[in-house]
Length: 428
Length: 175
Image (cartoon, rainbow over all chains, first blue to last red; front, top):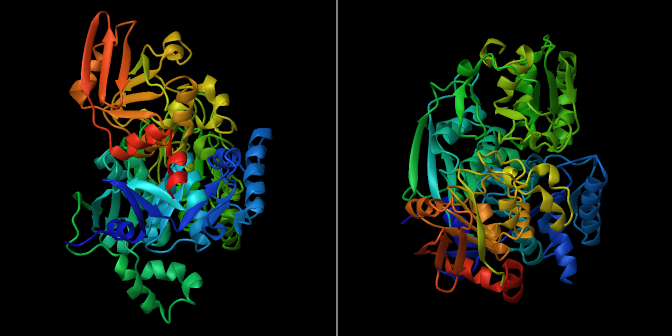
């Protein structure tokens, strides 16, 4: 019987099976940010175990509230910063070099096919786009990961999601994943890995694949996973060229992580995306989805373009292409947060930042800030935001505020009209 | 091991998320104790008052499907714990929240929908209490002179974590 990618990774990293159904895995990367790590650090200090299993396998960033907005967030940043220095963690990203963790760490080349990755952050599932098993965990799992380099899991079954057809104009990875979540429901993939397959995924960039895997958690999924292929190798090439004689050799090597033809899936879903329309959420759960046509005319107070879901260069390019020569509506405020300094710089070089600012956008430094209502774009009671983020929970971007999740293109259309609008009429 | 059982807080809705259990604006607190006043602050539910006596006195939450979905924040079980709640009984849990509960030595107990419906039939009882026999894997609910007991399943590993007082102590002695 064949194995899925997740099963192969589990088999290759198994340290212990203390009880039936509980698998303790060796970790390749443990990622840390300043919201969920400080309490783990404090506990390790209190236990007299202030050490790390391997400083090179720990990656740390200050990203959720940065630069710090008040004394409390400054203290959180300081705890992480002091610890990173104390433990000689080489890959620590502070103000100036920092960006949204799930955009920054792939960009730095820290992810490889076949890796096991944890972070005290639910959107860690993003890194599965490289053919890795990447799972969000709580602070206690993170603490044990930091100290021992292991984490325990119930071995998840895999749901295969075949994406067939071709994406129509104005429809993007974000629309696809919203559609998938609307069909599976917010707990349709609980204790499951979501494996994205098919010609639509094959044709996607790594950025788009990361948008898919990023939102696996919104269906309850443990990790999203894509098969590592030529696109993966092209993205990773600057970091792996010393390891392989050619790109073809890397593609061949990574092929071993692909799910076997006779692998057994918990469920298989087939979606044809050819007739898909731009989508937007309407309620307080990510599976509450309608077409932008149905929702067109819904007024918004703020537009937010950014986050680990959709703050990457290709997202900025799509929105800028629509905003060029246009102004945002006078009734709306629009915020762009490029997800990393590199994305920001590339966007500057390409003239995208100029387009956003001419249109009336505020451009902030890279940070998670507004997505979870912590800084740089918090909503007031009763306000509505059209956001390229991943969660529309009640109060997510500010107490009493409402969020409509949509693609970067649909966010640009919302900025132009000040209400939910069809992006297709503004596409060049 | 922690103590389990006592007055019940009923939360009659599916998909209660961790932003509702503890909003992100309070994740800047550095100690667990500091989270205490903010329990369930953003949860909008008919008849529910996050600052009410029922919330204050509760030691057990009984709720519906997919409790604890969303963010990985362990602040969610922590805010329950510092408010004296060490047991959540639900039809199902989101994975990370469930693991966080066991990792903290707390109990996340899953029971089938018909049993959860029976538990909710005690919602009108002002004196509803739940007691938990972890060794015997039995849960008992009492209220208005009524009493019902149910057996529950718990994965052996999760049970070991609860008995060990959490994952750090367990892992530290073993790995």
